[in-house]
Length: 109
Image 1 (spheres, helix red, strand yellow):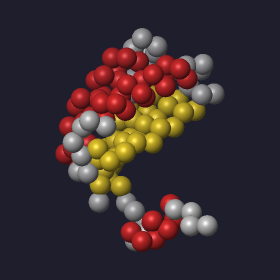
Image 2 (image 1 turned 30 degrees about the horizontal axis):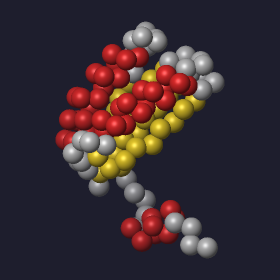
Image 3 (image 1 turned 90 degrees about the vertical axis):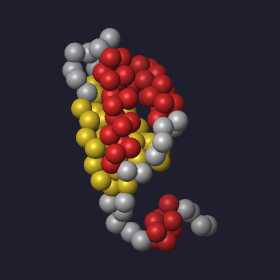
Image 4 (image 1 turned 135 degrees about the horizontal axis):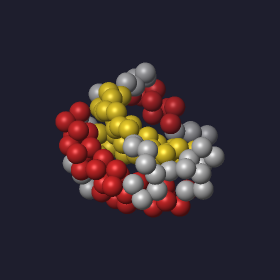
């Protein structure tokens, strides 16, 4: 079992470069933090909505990371929008056994 931070924020349309800049900056910080497992980023440019999903070993590590990362995101996006970002910390459930998961993520032919 592990945990994830799910962050959603809106920048408005035509702000992809801003989203990429924020993502790169915050990703570099994440990768240096204890308990970090990986990230996935979702960009919906037509609506101007962006999401980040960071994986952490424990809920405590996800919460500690959030104390560092979320204020940085809030501060940065104030330059582009008045909408506040949201964050949820959730447990990640894997619906497969480990060997099945590996098979589903690796193309063997």
